Length: 87
Image 1: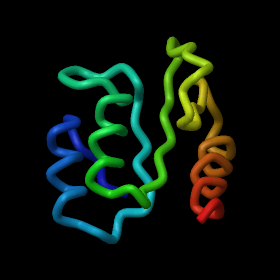
Image 2 (image 1 turned 60 degrees about the vertical axis):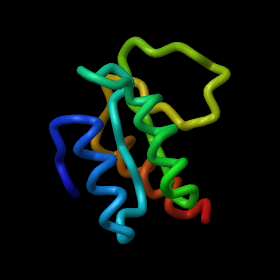
Image 3 (image 1 turned 90 degrees about the vertical axis):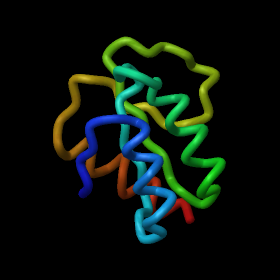
C-alpha cells in the first residue's frame, strides 16, 4: 500500500512504478477528483484496476466500481480482490 497526499503525487508514482496493480481512491479529493485521477491513471496504465470510494457520489453510469462509505474492512478486501481477479 502506498499512501499519497494528492492526485498529482499518485500520477507521478504510477508513471514510475509499474508494479502497482490497483488504484483505490476517494471520489472527493482536494485538487483533482478521484474520477479525474482514475481517467488519467488509466490513460497512463490501461491495465490498472481502479476502485473508487465515496459517501456522496451517485453517478450510476460510471463504469468504475465504487465502494460506498462507510464500509467495513472485509468489503474493501472483497472490492480490491474482485478487481484483481478480473484480469
